[in-house]
Length: 269
Image (cartoon, rainbow, N blue to C red):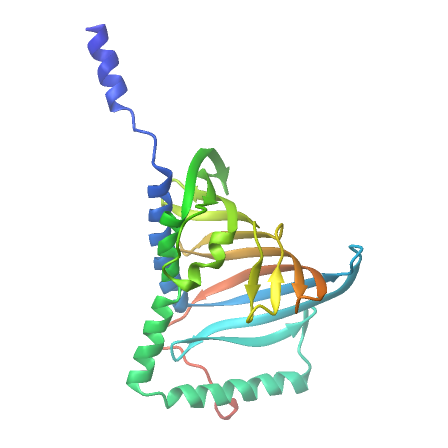
């Protein structure tokens, strides 16, 4: 009887979760959240800091944008610089840009709108390669925002051949991912560049050692959306000039975009 009870107890215990399967489910959730993002407006505050070769701060710039979807496109409307509202002149220029964009998108055909929506849905699908492109190791559990999360290490497979060119840059990163256990939702990511990562036709190269940090938060008890991002870049610009910089991005003031909401130009104000 004792042997039988011990056997049943061992059998009833949940097997150790598979790290790759956890990642796969979290990517499915991420694609769902990305699709729901278009239902929200929000504020994005970007703070950029540039340093000289000796690590001394040279310049700080802050821009604040309102982000919303307009005719199937996401649109960023500049509303502040250095944590101050825009001047009346600059605010008028931003409104004029918005008015022109509204007119442009109002005249898009149904075919054009369908194409835009398809392109947006395809935009993030390169993440489907992640489960095959990395080796994953479940290293424990930690609490994030008061909830238990799996902690998973991710190392790119050295001989993996990319199928989607947009996934190329992620295979040059190693990282750690925290995934909420109750929803299979990634809530935090820390990553480090292992190799040069090029952008803009190789004009900017992020050197090995650059670090990235991302966080997400639950909104309206229905969707997980970006909360913060931080990037420390040790880069070489145009292969000659070195660049050291930090970028802090905060996402806040999420509001559900109502179906009957509409944006007004100056004539409607």
